[in-house]
Length: 120
Image 1: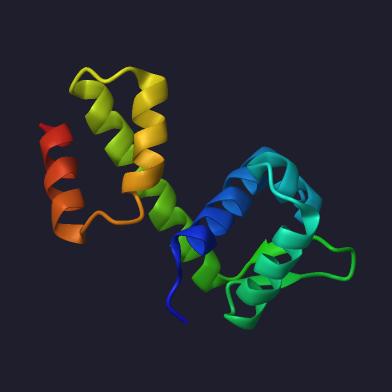
Image 2: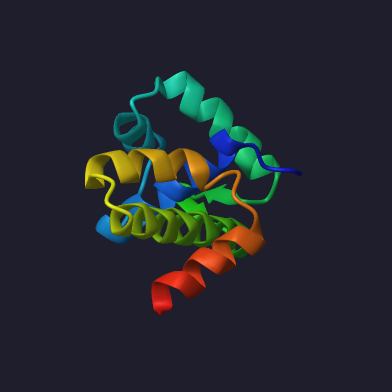
């Protein structure tokens, strides 16, 4: 299953929320992203079918190993691009917002070059 930008965003959100609290439910994702519960339910269903998320008997969302890998990768891309833009002089709030868009389309080669630049 090829992931679309929206699927990556859902996985990243579940990942970030799980770092802040012990358990994450669909309603938490809906509130965080500002989406309706039905939209989140549909997305979670697709992520379950793809093997990225499981839902336990209490309704808590859990990332599978594959889902965690994707979420961490998206989060890393976001972090690297944000730092790069800030270092270029972009205001932090703008850099974070722009990084959220760029993280889904940036090539591995470009990301590696930015990462190497930031490590200098």
